[in-house]
Every structure is written in C-alpha cells, then in structure tokens.
Image (cartoon, rainbow, N blue to C red; front, side):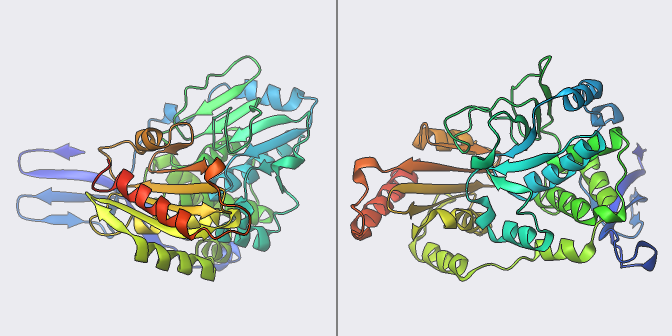
Length: 400
C-alpha cells in the first residue's frame, strides 16, 4: 500500500467467474483470483474490474508445515496398518482425508478412513458418498483395526466424547482449530488455527512433498476443494491467502459439475418439518433465539445442526440454541453464534457442564436424561413441555 496526503494506492484480490474451457476438458476452476490495483484520490476511486475480497495475507514462512522429514519418517517406517480418523464427518474432514490418502500412497502406504457418529446420514455427506462411491473408503469407527496407527484429521482432541471413552493415540495430527497439543519424537503435529480448513493444510503438504494431482484425481481434488470452500463459507470467512491458493490449485484438476452438486445437495422433508417446528416454538430474548424441533432420532442429528445454522441468520439474532429430544433418552442441543463479544464455548460449558462445548461459532451438547427418560412407548409430550420451559427459562428472560 502506498499513500500520500492526496491519494492512496492499494492492491487486492479480485474474484472473477471462470467459464468452462476445453483445454481442461471441462475440469476447470470455478473461481479465479486476480491481483489488481486501485487508486483513491481526493475526488474519486479508480479501481480495476471486480471487488476486493478480504483475506489474511500470511508471510511465506508461515505457509510451511513443521519438520516434514519427521512426517516422512513416521509414515514410511510404521509397520502397523494406517487409519485416518475423523471424529466429525463433514466436507472438510472428508476432503482432508481424501488428500491424505493421496499423500500416503505417494509414500508407499495406504489407509482406510474411520469416522464417529452418524455423519454419513447427513444429506450433504450422502451426496458425496453416492456420487464419489466413498462408502468402501469411509467406515464407521467400529471397524478401526485395534493395532492401527492413527492419523487424526480436523481435530486435535484425544479424549473426544464423540469417539467414545477410549482416548485416541495418533501418530499424526493435523487441525485448523485451536489446541495446546504438542508434538513429540513419535507424533507429528501441525495445528494452525489461522487457516480456514484442514483440507488447505493437507493440500499444502501435497505441494511440499511434490505430489502431483492429475485429471485422474478429479474426485479427490474436488472433494478437497469443497472442504476448503465449505469450511471458509465460500472463501468469505476466516480465509487466508493459502486457502484461496489451495482451492484454486485443487480445482485445476477438479470437476466443476461435481463441485456444484456437492454444494447444492438436496434436503429431505424432515429438515423443512424441523424448520417449521422451530419457527413455531421459537422465543427471542436479547439477541438469543431458543427453539425446539421436538422429537428426533440420532439419524436427524445433522439436520438439527442445519436448522441452527439457518436460524442464526435471523435479523437481530446473534446466538441460536436449538434442541431436540433424541429417541426419548437424550437432549441434543445445537448452538450457533455470530456474536464476537461472547464465547460460545463458555456459554455451553456454563449451562451444560461436562456435556457441551464449541469450536469457534459452532457448538452443541448431548445431555442424557437418565431417570427422567419416559418408558419405551410412552408419550413424550409432558417431557417436551417441561424441557421447553426449562430452556426458555435458562436462556430467555430469566436466564443468561
């Protein structure tokens, strides 16, 4: 940036749409980025074409992962079967996992991917599973080999309730969320919360190890690119220069139509039924919206999260708490916030100590009902009414 008392010249990143073109055989980036200049004078702004997009410029030294020779040694010298673990199945964890398998294969190894929960029931994940035939690769956590050497992606929590009571003991950890986990002689750790996605970090590793993607890797590249796109909310939130670079690089070999299908996945009728119930039961107090979707099953868990994500865009609302009664035995809570002044993790720990937590602007809780659970086959109507009053009191006018 150059300036004087009469003018200011700046450089920025400008977005442009890239139409399909035959040199890539239809496999082209959907978005490109141009560095352009604009000058502000006392009387006018004279920009290049486009609108500058905000991003975090990182020094080139910050783009490099730590001690890649240790990473190479850990991967190549392990004698145990490798397994990639993700405690929450979503586009970023899937993208990072597919890119990591590409890296492992370049080093003479391979791995299955094991996930926790019912993430494959999410409609977005189902679309990816169906269109890319991911079921043989992504397996439920019960199929994790007992002697597996674990590669933990998109999380650095070793005692993760989503995984179960037994702690994880990974040899590799890569995550873009805050964590105090430290590396050791036999554990390679790369944690960088400035990045918008774990897929960005693994894509960077492919570059460092000089692993080339080809047009035969179009599904791997597209899922990786979508992981970046999804976790940065379309390259608009918590997005660094490396996130943008890796998205564009991956889509050089990606599939434009597949990327669009992953983004515009169909939603089931149950989602709209939940939205209707949440709208009917909502209360709003001091920019907090509290609502219930009523009874639900474990299969509906990700739909509840999508309802919370949608409702946080309500005008005048900064925090959303949406809950459901899961299978009559568990209260499942999903929380979303755009409030930068208050910590969502603190809020959930305050009200659901030991059962809730958050990473950034997203969180939740699972509270077992224990003796309050109605007998099998009994009506949940009275319990739902009681819980609705409890939540409204806790977070509404009488709560915090």
